Length: 119
Image 1 (cartoon, rainbow, N blue to C red):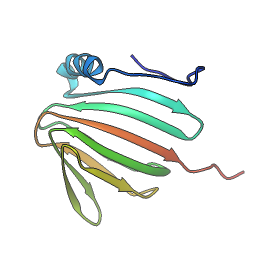
Image 2: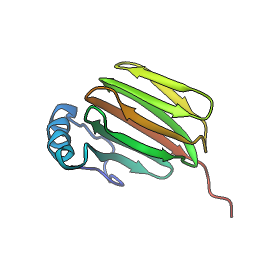
Image 3: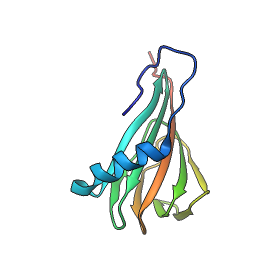
Image 4: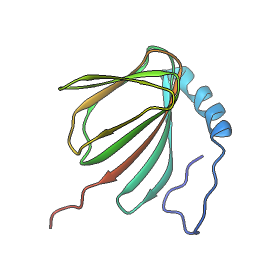
């Protein structure tokens, strides 16, 4: 289930229902994600990580807001190893390389505001 470029002014998601789907999908790879919202430069994704799974190092050309909804995650940057528990939020400036590792079964809400592309 995902919503891309919605054409109506309001959207409501059941994170509980999405969680069930993502948990099932994660059985093969250890993690799963779905796009909740995509419009212009804004993206919102919901991730589910099984204990021990990870998202390899990467960087995005925009501000990344990482909200730990459940579990225990680490986000490693070149500057620091950030430990996130449920209810904590980490904001990364554009182009900050980072990886994400689950130290327990975890859910993460990621919001990205991409930088404008130069002409």
